[in-house]
Image (cartoon, rainbow, N blue to C red; front, side, top):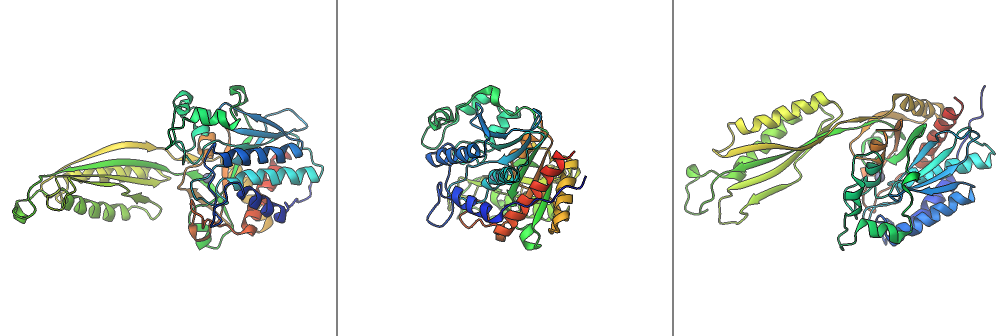
Length: 410
Ligand SMILES: [Zn+2]
């Protein structure tokens, strides 16, 4: 049966995103809405009032995640739409909130068209995705998926010494364990790209195939400290010169592997870090991300070969793996539906990977999940300049709605 193509209300979506941004809006039109802060409590209240107005029922779980459900004809596992309402300090108006407001706009469109879905639709707000106030990030979805231990998470503190558990209770959003997300037909998360690719290629929609895996090493170089003025150059074992050589070598070799590989030396510590003393120790991190495990293995081979390099200036070099994380692949069938929906509307699109972490990567462990990206202008995110064109937000939600309708018609 041919069903009518439904469109969301772009103007209403824009107004709602601006309304949500009022909770914690900064001087420069960004948002500071740290998890379980007063701003977060107020935006949660507002979100719940919007959902109740639409006749949705609200549940809260023991990690403070909110689930607002529009009843279906049949009482079956719902289609889940959502993301997070918390932000980093001086963050933007789109990261996270777009995925939640998208759910709201989809339900509004269904309700005003008198469509009762045959299975329920649930909008979810995951607590503390950003990890900006309480580390780690994706805390609640991590607990729900069994990746993090709840008792450990409850004891996490913010920079003022406030414990997560206290903040959760103070917010009024400490709910029941039995309300936790267990089963759903699908989880759909619309999110801004937080990178420059879609914007640079003038595309509106990114169908996210995976969240890329990564590996992180620590390289420790040990040389000799001595007087910077009296020690001839050929009698030194300078750990920083060795680090410089090895970083250059690693960059050259990693750069030759694959154009999609990204790698970062984000932390370097030099000891004793005194200008009159030859450095006797340098410790630096080296992380790399790629969707294919074979590429990550090549990266690890290169890192493990660094200690045997001829470029070590006579210093001892040790490479230690700190941790790694496998690529999380999203549900192929849902990715195909998202792609078909984008095509139906004639929106420009491509398949891509996510280099950043999202709640969906944990949820994907127990619910068929997929993500959709819309462009971040100039690739800016986690800052007040974060911006996505309103038309692109609208397109993203249209694709999501179409995908939901296709799922419901099956
Ligand atoms: Zn986010």
